[in-house]
Image (cartoon, rainbow, N blue to C red; front, side, top):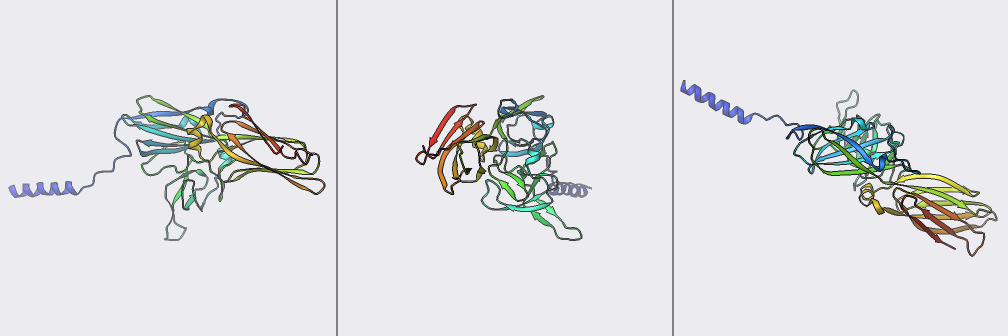
Length: 347
Protein backbone atom coordinates (compact mmCIF):
# COMPACT_ATOMS: atom_id res chain seq x y z
CA UNK A 1 0.00 0.00 0.00
CA UNK A 2 2.83 2.31 0.87
CA UNK A 3 4.48 1.66 -2.52
CA UNK A 4 1.23 2.42 -4.34
CA UNK A 5 0.92 5.72 -2.44
CA UNK A 6 4.51 6.71 -3.25
CA UNK A 7 4.06 5.82 -6.92
CA UNK A 8 0.83 7.83 -7.10
CA UNK A 9 2.52 10.82 -5.45
CA UNK A 10 5.45 10.66 -7.88
CA UNK A 11 3.08 10.43 -10.83
CA UNK A 12 1.20 13.50 -9.62
CA UNK A 13 4.43 15.44 -9.26
CA UNK A 14 5.62 14.44 -12.72
CA UNK A 15 2.26 15.31 -14.32
CA UNK A 16 2.14 18.65 -12.57
CA UNK A 17 5.66 19.41 -13.75
CA UNK A 18 4.84 18.50 -17.36
CA UNK A 19 1.45 20.20 -17.62
CA UNK A 20 1.32 23.60 -19.36
CA UNK A 21 -0.24 26.56 -17.63
CA UNK A 22 -2.98 28.19 -19.75
CA UNK A 23 -1.75 31.32 -21.50
CA UNK A 24 -3.11 34.33 -19.61
CA UNK A 25 -5.19 36.94 -21.35
CA UNK A 26 -3.21 39.93 -22.58
CA UNK A 27 -2.36 42.23 -19.68
CA UNK A 28 -4.83 40.48 -17.38
CA UNK A 29 -3.32 41.67 -14.10
CA UNK A 30 -5.17 44.27 -12.04
CA UNK A 31 -8.87 45.06 -11.84
CA UNK A 32 -10.36 45.56 -15.31
CA UNK A 33 -12.36 48.76 -15.81
CA UNK A 34 -14.14 50.19 -18.85
CA UNK A 35 -12.90 53.59 -20.00
CA UNK A 36 -14.58 55.73 -22.66
CA UNK A 37 -12.30 57.71 -24.98
CA UNK A 38 -13.23 61.03 -26.50
CA UNK A 39 -11.54 63.59 -28.74
CA UNK A 40 -11.00 67.22 -27.81
CA UNK A 41 -8.66 70.08 -28.66
CA UNK A 42 -8.58 71.59 -32.12
CA UNK A 43 -10.76 68.93 -33.69
CA UNK A 44 -14.01 69.92 -32.03
CA UNK A 45 -13.68 73.70 -32.41
CA UNK A 46 -15.35 75.41 -35.36
CA UNK A 47 -12.95 78.14 -36.48
CA UNK A 48 -13.28 79.55 -40.00
CA UNK A 49 -11.78 79.23 -42.56
CA UNK A 50 -10.56 75.70 -41.74
CA UNK A 51 -13.32 73.40 -40.48
CA UNK A 52 -12.56 71.10 -37.58
CA UNK A 53 -15.74 69.29 -36.48
CA UNK A 54 -15.79 65.50 -36.53
CA UNK A 55 -18.11 63.71 -38.99
CA UNK A 56 -19.07 60.06 -39.60
CA UNK A 57 -16.99 60.05 -42.82
CA UNK A 58 -13.81 60.53 -40.78
CA UNK A 59 -11.54 57.66 -39.74
CA UNK A 60 -9.95 57.44 -36.28
CA UNK A 61 -6.98 55.18 -35.56
CA UNK A 62 -5.93 54.59 -31.94
CA UNK A 63 -2.87 52.73 -30.62
CA UNK A 64 -2.70 52.00 -26.88
CA UNK A 65 0.38 51.05 -24.86
CA UNK A 66 0.60 49.60 -21.37
CA UNK A 67 3.90 50.89 -20.10
CA UNK A 68 6.25 50.34 -23.02
CA UNK A 69 4.31 47.33 -24.33
CA UNK A 70 1.69 47.28 -27.05
CA UNK A 71 -1.75 46.80 -25.50
CA UNK A 72 -4.57 47.43 -28.01
CA UNK A 73 -5.40 49.15 -31.27
CA UNK A 74 -8.54 49.93 -33.24
CA UNK A 75 -10.06 51.78 -36.18
CA UNK A 76 -13.26 53.77 -35.64
CA UNK A 77 -15.74 56.01 -37.40
CA UNK A 78 -17.97 56.45 -34.33
CA UNK A 79 -16.52 58.28 -31.32
CA UNK A 80 -19.27 56.96 -29.04
CA UNK A 81 -17.93 53.41 -29.48
CA UNK A 82 -14.37 54.19 -28.43
CA UNK A 83 -14.54 52.14 -25.22
CA UNK A 84 -11.58 50.17 -23.90
CA UNK A 85 -10.93 47.85 -20.96
CA UNK A 86 -7.89 48.89 -18.93
CA UNK A 87 -6.36 47.59 -15.72
CA UNK A 88 -6.09 49.61 -12.55
CA UNK A 89 -2.60 50.22 -11.26
CA UNK A 90 -1.15 50.24 -14.78
CA UNK A 91 0.09 53.22 -16.77
CA UNK A 92 -1.14 53.73 -20.34
CA UNK A 93 -0.23 55.78 -23.35
CA UNK A 94 -2.58 56.62 -26.23
CA UNK A 95 -1.64 57.65 -29.78
CA UNK A 96 -4.47 58.80 -32.02
CA UNK A 97 -4.87 60.19 -35.53
CA UNK A 98 -7.91 61.32 -37.47
CA UNK A 99 -8.22 61.50 -41.25
CA UNK A 100 -11.02 63.91 -42.13
CA UNK A 101 -13.21 62.46 -44.89
CA UNK A 102 -11.03 59.37 -44.61
CA UNK A 103 -13.65 57.05 -46.09
CA UNK A 104 -13.46 59.03 -49.33
CA UNK A 105 -9.69 59.61 -49.31
CA UNK A 106 -8.12 56.34 -48.14
CA UNK A 107 -8.02 53.43 -50.58
CA UNK A 108 -10.27 50.57 -49.48
CA UNK A 109 -10.85 48.23 -52.43
CA UNK A 110 -8.52 45.43 -51.46
CA UNK A 111 -8.28 41.74 -52.17
CA UNK A 112 -4.70 42.02 -53.44
CA UNK A 113 -1.18 42.53 -52.16
CA UNK A 114 1.25 45.36 -52.81
CA UNK A 115 4.97 45.70 -52.16
CA UNK A 116 5.84 49.08 -50.67
CA UNK A 117 8.28 50.88 -48.39
CA UNK A 118 6.11 52.00 -45.49
CA UNK A 119 6.86 55.38 -43.89
CA UNK A 120 9.58 54.97 -41.29
CA UNK A 121 10.83 51.75 -42.93
CA UNK A 122 14.08 51.39 -44.87
CA UNK A 123 13.10 48.36 -46.96
CA UNK A 124 9.96 47.20 -48.70
CA UNK A 125 7.32 44.91 -47.20
CA UNK A 126 4.39 43.07 -48.73
CA UNK A 127 1.01 44.29 -47.49
CA UNK A 128 -2.22 42.43 -48.14
CA UNK A 129 -5.16 44.79 -48.68
CA UNK A 130 -8.18 43.05 -47.20
CA UNK A 131 -11.39 43.59 -49.22
CA UNK A 132 -13.35 46.55 -47.88
CA UNK A 133 -10.68 47.59 -45.39
CA UNK A 134 -8.78 50.87 -45.39
CA UNK A 135 -5.14 51.05 -46.42
CA UNK A 136 -2.32 53.35 -45.27
CA UNK A 137 -2.10 54.88 -42.68
CA UNK A 138 -4.16 52.08 -41.10
CA UNK A 139 -1.70 49.26 -41.74
CA UNK A 140 -0.98 46.85 -38.89
CA UNK A 141 1.66 44.18 -38.51
CA UNK A 142 -0.73 41.22 -38.57
CA UNK A 143 0.65 38.56 -40.95
CA UNK A 144 -1.88 37.45 -43.56
CA UNK A 145 -2.10 33.83 -44.73
CA UNK A 146 -3.93 33.01 -47.94
CA UNK A 147 -4.61 29.57 -49.41
CA UNK A 148 -5.78 29.62 -53.04
CA UNK A 149 -8.89 27.62 -53.86
CA UNK A 150 -8.00 24.00 -54.61
CA UNK A 151 -4.39 24.45 -53.56
CA UNK A 152 -2.49 23.18 -50.56
CA UNK A 153 -0.02 26.04 -50.66
CA UNK A 154 -0.17 28.87 -48.17
CA UNK A 155 1.22 32.32 -48.94
CA UNK A 156 2.21 34.72 -46.23
CA UNK A 157 2.20 38.51 -46.55
CA UNK A 158 4.10 40.64 -44.06
CA UNK A 159 1.33 42.96 -42.95
CA UNK A 160 -2.32 43.69 -43.59
CA UNK A 161 -4.98 46.36 -43.26
CA UNK A 162 -6.96 46.92 -40.06
CA UNK A 163 -10.73 46.29 -39.98
CA UNK A 164 -13.14 49.15 -39.32
CA UNK A 165 -14.83 47.38 -36.40
CA UNK A 166 -15.37 50.29 -34.01
CA UNK A 167 -13.72 48.15 -31.34
CA UNK A 168 -10.27 47.48 -29.95
CA UNK A 169 -8.05 44.49 -30.70
CA UNK A 170 -6.09 43.58 -27.56
CA UNK A 171 -2.59 42.37 -28.38
CA UNK A 172 0.99 42.68 -27.19
CA UNK A 173 2.25 41.98 -30.70
CA UNK A 174 -0.19 43.32 -33.28
CA UNK A 175 -0.22 47.09 -33.62
CA UNK A 176 -0.57 50.02 -36.02
CA UNK A 177 2.62 50.90 -37.87
CA UNK A 178 2.18 54.35 -39.40
CA UNK A 179 -0.19 56.54 -37.37
CA UNK A 180 2.50 59.19 -36.85
CA UNK A 181 3.06 59.73 -40.58
CA UNK A 182 1.00 61.77 -43.02
CA UNK A 183 1.30 59.39 -45.98
CA UNK A 184 -2.05 58.17 -47.32
CA UNK A 185 -2.78 55.44 -49.86
CA UNK A 186 -5.21 56.90 -52.38
CA UNK A 187 -4.98 53.84 -54.64
CA UNK A 188 -3.62 50.31 -54.61
CA UNK A 189 -0.12 51.56 -55.46
CA UNK A 190 -0.58 55.30 -54.95
CA UNK A 191 1.02 56.53 -51.75
CA UNK A 192 1.14 60.29 -51.23
CA UNK A 193 3.58 61.70 -48.70
CA UNK A 194 1.87 65.11 -48.44
CA UNK A 195 -1.73 64.26 -49.33
CA UNK A 196 -4.63 66.64 -49.82
CA UNK A 197 -6.09 65.76 -46.46
CA UNK A 198 -6.98 67.33 -43.15
CA UNK A 199 -5.25 65.37 -40.39
CA UNK A 200 -5.23 65.49 -36.62
CA UNK A 201 -2.82 63.87 -34.20
CA UNK A 202 -2.68 63.56 -30.43
CA UNK A 203 -1.01 61.65 -27.60
CA UNK A 204 -1.76 61.11 -23.94
CA UNK A 205 0.84 59.58 -21.63
CA UNK A 206 0.86 58.56 -17.98
CA UNK A 207 -2.83 57.67 -17.73
CA UNK A 208 -3.76 55.43 -14.79
CA UNK A 209 -7.40 54.31 -14.96
CA UNK A 210 -9.93 54.00 -12.16
CA UNK A 211 -13.51 52.81 -12.16
CA UNK A 212 -15.86 54.98 -14.22
CA UNK A 213 -13.07 56.96 -15.88
CA UNK A 214 -13.32 58.75 -19.21
CA UNK A 215 -10.29 60.01 -21.11
CA UNK A 216 -10.25 62.88 -23.56
CA UNK A 217 -7.42 62.89 -26.10
CA UNK A 218 -6.47 66.48 -27.11
CA UNK A 219 -6.09 66.49 -30.90
CA UNK A 220 -3.85 68.89 -32.80
CA UNK A 221 -4.36 69.78 -36.43
CA UNK A 222 -1.30 68.67 -38.38
CA UNK A 223 -2.33 70.20 -41.70
CA UNK A 224 -1.99 73.50 -43.49
CA UNK A 225 -4.13 75.37 -46.01
CA UNK A 226 -2.94 77.21 -49.12
CA UNK A 227 -4.89 79.84 -51.00
CA UNK A 228 -3.40 81.06 -54.30
CA UNK A 229 -4.12 84.23 -56.24
CA UNK A 230 -2.55 85.51 -59.46
CA UNK A 231 -2.86 89.11 -60.63
CA UNK A 232 -1.37 91.23 -63.41
CA UNK A 233 -1.76 88.85 -66.37
CA UNK A 234 -1.92 90.97 -69.54
CA UNK A 235 -1.24 88.31 -72.16
CA UNK A 236 -0.34 84.64 -72.58
CA UNK A 237 -0.65 82.26 -69.65
CA UNK A 238 1.00 81.57 -66.32
CA UNK A 239 2.08 78.35 -64.59
CA UNK A 240 2.48 78.27 -60.80
CA UNK A 241 4.21 75.38 -59.03
CA UNK A 242 4.38 74.71 -55.29
CA UNK A 243 6.77 71.98 -54.13
CA UNK A 244 9.38 70.86 -51.64
CA UNK A 245 12.21 68.36 -51.88
CA UNK A 246 9.82 65.45 -51.42
CA UNK A 247 6.87 66.22 -53.65
CA UNK A 248 5.24 68.67 -56.03
CA UNK A 249 2.17 69.68 -54.11
CA UNK A 250 0.45 71.78 -56.70
CA UNK A 251 0.74 72.89 -60.31
CA UNK A 252 -1.60 75.42 -61.91
CA UNK A 253 -0.87 75.57 -65.63
CA UNK A 254 -2.45 77.76 -68.31
CA UNK A 255 -3.79 80.55 -66.09
CA UNK A 256 -4.91 83.21 -68.58
CA UNK A 257 -6.55 85.80 -66.35
CA UNK A 258 -6.34 87.19 -62.86
CA UNK A 259 -7.64 84.45 -60.58
CA UNK A 260 -8.33 83.85 -56.92
CA UNK A 261 -8.23 80.11 -56.22
CA UNK A 262 -9.96 78.44 -53.28
CA UNK A 263 -8.20 76.98 -50.27
CA UNK A 264 -6.61 73.54 -50.54
CA UNK A 265 -5.59 71.63 -47.40
CA UNK A 266 -2.58 69.32 -47.19
CA UNK A 267 -1.27 67.33 -44.26
CA UNK A 268 2.35 67.37 -43.18
CA UNK A 269 4.37 64.16 -43.36
CA UNK A 270 5.90 64.18 -39.86
CA UNK A 271 2.69 64.37 -37.83
CA UNK A 272 4.40 63.74 -34.49
CA UNK A 273 6.75 66.71 -34.94
CA UNK A 274 3.87 68.93 -36.06
CA UNK A 275 2.03 67.91 -32.88
CA UNK A 276 5.07 68.20 -30.61
CA UNK A 277 6.02 71.69 -31.83
CA UNK A 278 2.50 72.80 -32.67
CA UNK A 279 2.80 76.43 -31.56
CA UNK A 280 5.41 77.31 -34.18
CA UNK A 281 5.45 74.42 -36.61
CA UNK A 282 5.99 75.28 -40.28
CA UNK A 283 7.76 73.78 -43.27
CA UNK A 284 9.51 75.38 -46.22
CA UNK A 285 8.05 75.10 -49.71
CA UNK A 286 9.16 76.58 -53.02
CA UNK A 287 6.79 78.66 -55.15
CA UNK A 288 7.80 79.02 -58.80
CA UNK A 289 6.19 81.03 -61.61
CA UNK A 290 6.64 80.83 -65.39
CA UNK A 291 4.90 83.35 -67.66
CA UNK A 292 4.41 82.26 -71.27
CA UNK A 293 3.96 85.60 -73.00
CA UNK A 294 1.67 86.10 -75.94
CA UNK A 295 4.57 87.26 -78.12
CA UNK A 296 6.21 83.85 -77.85
CA UNK A 297 8.63 84.72 -75.05
CA UNK A 298 8.79 82.59 -71.90
CA UNK A 299 9.68 84.43 -68.72
CA UNK A 300 10.85 82.27 -65.84
CA UNK A 301 10.15 84.57 -62.94
CA UNK A 302 12.14 82.46 -60.53
CA UNK A 303 11.26 80.82 -57.22
CA UNK A 304 10.69 81.88 -53.66
CA UNK A 305 11.08 79.76 -50.52
CA UNK A 306 8.16 80.36 -48.19
CA UNK A 307 6.97 78.83 -44.94
CA UNK A 308 3.57 77.19 -44.70
CA UNK A 309 2.40 77.21 -41.13
CA UNK A 310 0.40 74.57 -39.30
CA UNK A 311 -3.33 75.14 -38.77
CA UNK A 312 -3.46 78.20 -40.98
CA UNK A 313 -4.58 79.29 -44.41
CA UNK A 314 -1.40 80.50 -46.07
CA UNK A 315 -2.32 83.00 -48.79
CA UNK A 316 0.14 83.06 -51.68
CA UNK A 317 -0.31 86.22 -53.77
CA UNK A 318 1.51 86.41 -57.07
CA UNK A 319 1.67 89.83 -58.71
CA UNK A 320 3.06 90.05 -62.22
CA UNK A 321 4.56 93.06 -63.98
CA UNK A 322 4.88 93.88 -67.67
CA UNK A 323 8.12 95.70 -66.97
CA UNK A 324 11.20 93.68 -67.89
CA UNK A 325 13.10 95.14 -64.95
CA UNK A 326 10.43 94.50 -62.39
CA UNK A 327 9.11 91.20 -63.73
CA UNK A 328 8.92 88.86 -60.77
CA UNK A 329 6.75 87.64 -57.95
CA UNK A 330 5.44 89.11 -54.75
CA UNK A 331 4.35 86.35 -52.40
CA UNK A 332 2.31 87.34 -49.37
CA UNK A 333 1.64 84.79 -46.66
CA UNK A 334 -1.29 85.64 -44.47
CA UNK A 335 -1.83 83.41 -41.48
CA UNK A 336 -5.12 84.56 -39.93
CA UNK A 337 -4.93 82.25 -36.92
CA UNK A 338 -1.31 83.03 -36.03
CA UNK A 339 0.42 86.06 -37.57
CA UNK A 340 0.62 88.03 -40.80
CA UNK A 341 3.87 87.87 -42.72
CA UNK A 342 4.88 89.12 -46.15
CA UNK A 343 7.65 87.79 -48.37
CA UNK A 344 8.56 89.42 -51.68
CA UNK A 345 11.24 88.90 -54.30
CA UNK A 346 12.02 89.58 -57.95
CA UNK A 347 10.97 93.25 -57.82
